[in-house]
Length: 236
Image (cartoon, rainbow, N blue to C red; front, side, top):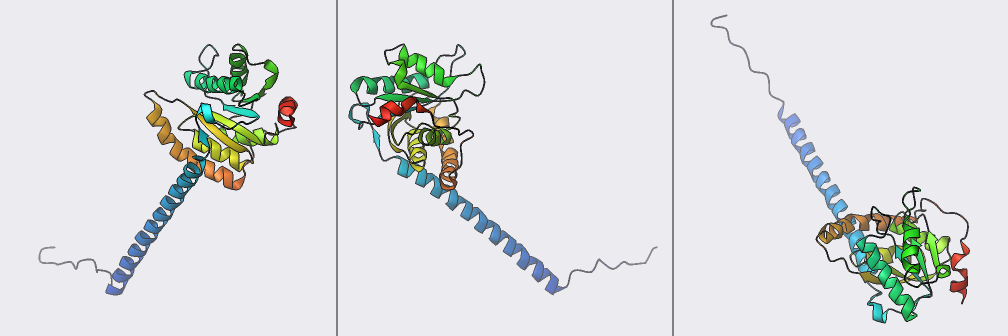
């Protein structure tokens, strides 16, 4: 009605306002602490994996002898043959075998379906270029780097190996194999193409996972009984 006035909604008492401001500041402060700790953990994991994994990287010509080369899978073309990246890895294994720097090859890759068989394609590539079939062992459950390294040690009995993968991937691969108990050195295959920047960036996140897998000793997707395919090579 005309002439009537309404009081404004009463404001919160000063003590309540101060409490709200205090709680807001505490929440922001703790959020910043959590974020900072997360950044420290992530950066520390990356530095640990990448830093410790860089020791023991060699050129093909001067890599120390090891009984076995562990060649990690890198995909197949639509016709079932190795991709360019995988072929470059296999070329290094062939060179090391011809030089006498290795006596056998463990081809570790993905064979999760009947239509996709990385290890067999790797063996066929090597055998077609002169490596004897009986010195190439196949790991059909090398679904990631950690699994390949653990299975090399636990299933195939490999205690020392030359790891062959792309240069950007090699530090993480060496870290994972050493955490699995393999005395590993490595040779990096060329990764020179337009997509390498994306792969290098992906290594940062993958390094955090590798650190976690290494600390927790994560079991691979598949283990199983001992595979004797490399026994003759490893005992000579």
